[in-house]
Length: 113
Length: 112
Image 1 (cartoon, rainbow over the protein chains, first blue to last red):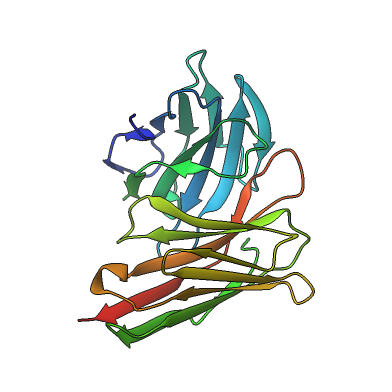
Image 2 (tube, each protein chain N blue to C red):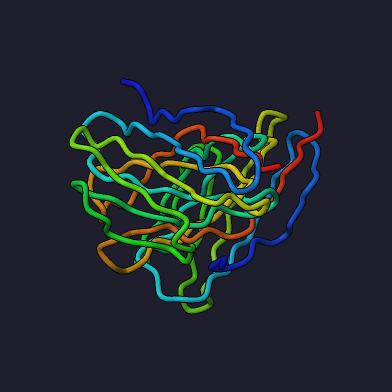
């Protein structure tokens, strides 16, 4: 079985632009979570989605949004990019929002110049 | 914000030695998990310990949890060069959401 997949692998954007990151969960997993990992720090929770509905949101500005599709894949959108948005964006899938174990994808490395 | 801190921030040992990493957290938890990350890539789940457990083993890994002190430790025995990575503890909320709150990580370097 394929694990969690994310695209693209790397991305370079300039300040003010917007970006869309994509995630496909493990087959059968219905919950997707997004995390931001700034260099040298641990990941920070951004969003959790289940059955196309937002189930949780971390402390991130409204420039960050996400959605989940009927096939349980998900997109993370970031508008008006700032230099500080440069990070590794990780997607994690789990069977349900309350599942203990989350399985992480390889991440998308976003660089904002 | 980070839930807690890992200690030490960096650790360098020789192959064959044991590596011990500590994690402290601040709030009540449902479980605590340890993850491994190689060179800024995706996270690999290592082990999960529930709040009502005190110790757990998996291969060369041993995890302890002390909820009274809000701390956990990860012991890697007989380390190998391939164990070189960053290790993160993450706490699971005691809610239906189960968003993980990560510490800042320990960078382990195992010298061959």
